[in-house]
Image 1 (cartoon, rainbow, N blue to C red):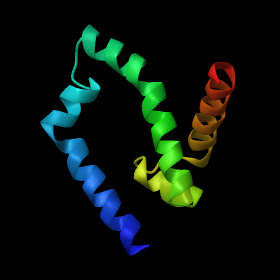
Image 2: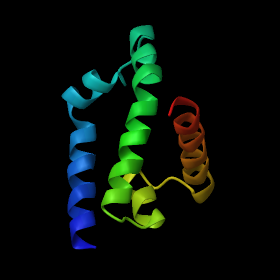
Image 3: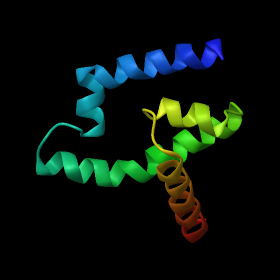
Length: 88
């Protein structure tokens, strides 16, 4: 659990950095929204793969995503699974 907390702190600190906002397109503007739409599915796929490899519990994964609700997390997983089924 200590390792997960350390990772969560690092992710939170990185999320606050300017580079993160610029790289992932979270700043305001239409080009940012386009970048989010384009990169979003890859980010979700990557997060879920890391979660699987690290054998994180759903509760810990939800915390790393900022404390999202059970429903939102399972919807995210369901949509990602549907996308993977269609592409692969």
